[in-house]
Every structure is written in C-alpha cells, then in structure tokens.
Image (tube, rainbow, N blue to C red; front, side):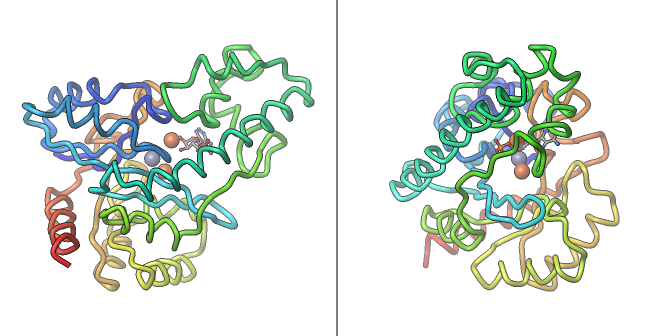
Length: 283
Ligand code: AMP
Ligand code: FE
Ligand code: FE
Ligand code: ZN
C-alpha cells in the first residue's frame, strides 16, 4: 500500500513527518509522499525519519492555483526541496498568506467574533498558517461547533470572513514544479467544480502546459470517479496517481493509505512517477 498525498504539522496536518513514517510502518505502507501546502519545510525531517525505514519517503508539495469557482491544487513530486527558485516563489505565497491572515482576523473581529492572533497561532504547526487553524481557534473560543461549521459559516469561499490570497496560475505552478525537477499532478480534480466536459477541457489545457499526472485515486472519489479520471489519464497520456489527503487527527475517520477503508493506490503510480522523474533528469 502507498499513499502519495499526506500533510504534516508543516502545513495543516497534526503529525510530524517522523510520526507519519511511524504510522506508515504500522499500517504496512511501502511508500509515503509528503505534500504539505506551500512548503517543503517538512521534507528534510521526512527523509531523515525514513532513512533506515521500510517506508520509502517521496518529497512533494501541494500548491494552490488560481481558480474561478472551486479549488485547484497542483501536487509536485520529487521536487528538489533546496531549489532556490522554488523557495523564492514559496516566499511570495507566504507573504500573501501573512497579508490574508491579518485580513481574516480583522474581518472576524468586525463580525463580532472575539479572536486574537495568539489563538490562531496556538493551533498552527511549525510553518504554514492557514484557514484550518482559524477554524480550530473559532471552535476553541466557542464561536462555532466544529471546523466544518467554521468553514461553512465564515471561512469558506464566498463566506463573510473569506479573503482571497495571492496564488500562481496553474501554468505557473506546473512550470515551477518542473523547474524544481518535479513531476506535476492535478490534485483531487473534482474540487475544481466544473461539469465533466469543461473539466476535461481544463485537464487537456494543463497537459499542454506540462502537467504530468492526475490524482484519480482519492479517498473521497467514488469508484466511478476513479474510473473516469483513469480514463482521462489514458486519453491525455497522464500518470494516474493517488493518495488520501491525510491531515491526521483533523479527520479521524480517514486512515493513512486506505482513506475511508476502500482506497488502494496502485504501486504502479509511484513507479510511473519515478520513470517520469528519470526522464526529466536525463533531459
Ligand atoms: P488555506 O490553504 O489556508 O486556504 O486552507 C485550505 C485548507 O483548508 C484545505 O487544504 C483544507 O485542509 C481545509 N479546508 C478547506 N475547506 C474546508 C472545509 N469546508 N472544511 C474543512 N476543511 C477545509
Ligand atoms: Fe489541507
Ligand atoms: Fe488539496
Ligand atoms: Zn492536500
């Protein structure tokens, strides 16, 4: 069993990279990719923790791209986490997040929710601070009942405390990952929230920009979705990848590797990513 989409305390997960490796060992995984939002801070600790482990560690990242309606995320696998261009671009995203976090706090306070930056910071891990940490702070302060309610009522796109932030376009994300020696993959395509014919057009366009794969296997995808996206992968010569989007204790029903119990990401996904990386290195 492999899992190619996992978050740690470096973004909005609750496990350290070392804890993730331990859990992966316990669950019998053979490989684990760390794909934290907008950071490669956890890669070095992951590689350290996995050296000498039966679990193979795959360095990754998840970038948020501009998207009109829904959410578009681009995963990067086998990126060089020391690549200067990558680190610089990430810094720009970080600055955008800082500005946005200040604005979200202001909006919440204006709406009458008593909340301080220290409340939010307390729930953040060790690197990227995002909306999930606001959600936890709101729950702790008793303003909302659950993280989900925090997003539904306040923090979700279109809700009163939502604030846009600086994002690269999907093309820029793909080019950035490529420049850092990585293979780009469109994450959970369904969250782009487009009808199939339009979504397929988007995937085709991204392939033309250099997209390497599509995340067909995903904890929340129904079997027919998996089949559909695997079909598109064939149509556009993309690698079919997959993972759980594990965030730790934030979603207790979701397990590393198997998601809600049914997910099985084929080992071939990782083999194909490695082959693509090899081609990139040789080119
Ligand atoms: P940010 O990157 O700060 O905009 O936060 C996005 C993250 O918030 C996503 O990666 C999810 O982990 C989480 N998230 C987004 N929407 C929801 C939701 N409706 N309920 C719970 N978590 C969410
Ligand atoms: Fe997340
Ligand atoms: Fe995502
Ligand atoms: Zn994710």
